[in-house]
Length: 599
Image (cartoon, rainbow, N blue to C red; front, side):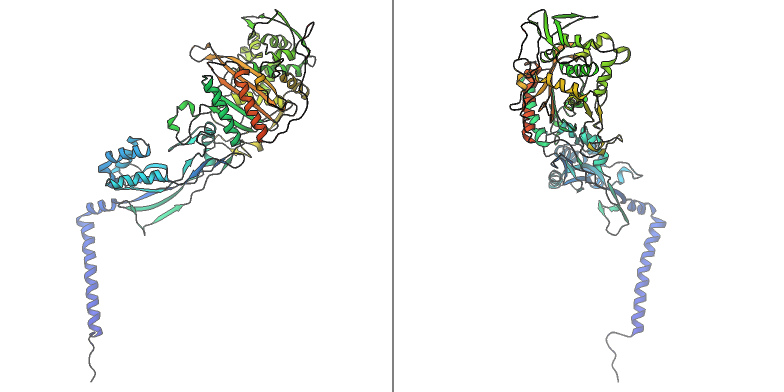
C-alpha cells in the first residue's frame, strides 16, 4: 500500500493558494477604497511628492582659437549645483549664505532657489528641483556641496555642466569677452554666441524625494555642441604687444591705449590690444568699463596721422601734386573762424617746405595750404572710401562707426581741421585699416578677425573668406606717400626717429590731437598721441597702429607711441621671419630754395 508524502494533496495546496491570493486582493481593494473614497486628499498630497522635472543637458561650448590653433577660450569640466527645496527650505537662509560665499553667487537668488520657485504649474512648496548655480568649475562645485554636507545640510547635488576657461587670463580678454552664469559679455563670446553655444538638450523624468525614479517614464533630447571659432589673432604677437603697450601707458600716466597689427596684404588682424584690460576668468574683479574693447568702441580725433590720408588722396586727385611740390608755410594761418598753428614755432616766418617736408615735420598749416587744391567735397569722398564714418565690418557688437561730418556740417572751416585730423572721429581699428590701405598700394581690404567665415548673432557672415577689396587711391600716390612717410622716422628730417626698426625700412606718421571732454563738449588740454606705420616700407608685410589716450607725461606721438611701434613691429618681423629688403630708404628733399637741406 502506497504511503502519502508530506507535501499534502494537490487539491489542498490549490485551495490554500487561492485563499492567499484572495486575501492580498482584498487588502489592495480596501486600500484603494480608502484612497479614492475616504482619503483622496492625503493621496493627492502623496502624489505631489513625486513631480515631473525638465533637466538641461548642456551643450559643450565651442572653443575660440588663435590663428595657430592655440586655445584662447575653451570649455572644461564643470558642474551645476542643484537643490531639492523639500530638503533645503527650512535651512535656506543659512545654506544660501554658505553657497553665496563659496560660489560667489547672489544671495537673494540662491535663497529663492533653496526655498523653491513657482513654475510650470508646480507650486513652490512642491518643487523638488531647482538650479542654484550653473557652469561652476568642478572642483569648486564639489567643495561647496561637501562643505554643506559636512555641516549637516541635505538636498544639494551636482550634474555635468561644462564651464568656460580662458588659458591666457588677460590675454585678448577685451576682444574675446567672457561667459558668465547667465550671459556672455562683449567681444567674440557675445557677438558669436549662437555659433559657439550650440543647443542644449533636455531630459524629462519623475523625481521623488529629490531623486530620479529609476523605472519612471522619461524622454531625452540630445544636446548639439557649439562650433569652434578660429581668429586671425596670433597669440604670441598679442601678448608681446600687450606688454609693450602696458609699459607705455603706465609710465606716462595715460588713461588707456590700444595697439592694432594688420597683415598689410590681407588686412587680417594679427593683434588687437587694449589696456587696461581684465582677467576673463575673474571679470568681476575689474571695472565694467575695462571689460570691452576700446579699440572698437571708443572714438577720438586722430590728429596728424590723418595727414597720410589727406595728402595721399590729394596726390591721387591732382597728379600735379607730388612729394616735391613747394610750399611757403607761415607761423600762423588765418582762416574763417580761428587761426591755425603748427605744433612748434618755425625758425623763420616763411618756411620753404616741400610736401615731403610738411609730412616729415607734421605741419598743420602746410597740410591745409596743400589741401586747398581739393575740389568741393572731394576730400570727404576719399575719406569715406578709406572707411571713415562707418563700421569696419569685423562683425563685433559695440563697434562705433566714428564721425565723419557730412551735409551742412561739412563746412570750409571743418574741412580745414579735418585735413590734419581734428573735427573727425575714428576708432583705432578704423584708422589702422585706412593707413593699411596706403601700405597695400591704395587697395582697401575688409579687415578680418575670423579665419574662414562665421555668422554672428546679428546675421552677418564675416571672416577672411568674406573679405572684399576696393581701390581707394592709385599705386603711384600710395608709393609717393610711402616715401614721404620714410622721412618721418629719419633722425635728420623727421619727428619720430624712435620709431625706427633696425635693419628695415619703415614708413610712419606721428599723431597728437586735442581731446574732447564729454562733459563740457570742449577741448580740455588733454591729448591723444599715436603712431602709425608699416614695414618693410618698400614691400609692406605689417601695419602697426599705436594710440595712447591722455598721457600726463611724454605727450608726443613720436616719443611715446613711436617706441611702442618700434618694439611691436620688430617683434612681428622676427616672429614671422620677414627679411629686410636690403634697399635704400627715401631721400626726398624736405626743403627748397637757397640753403635748403639736401640730404
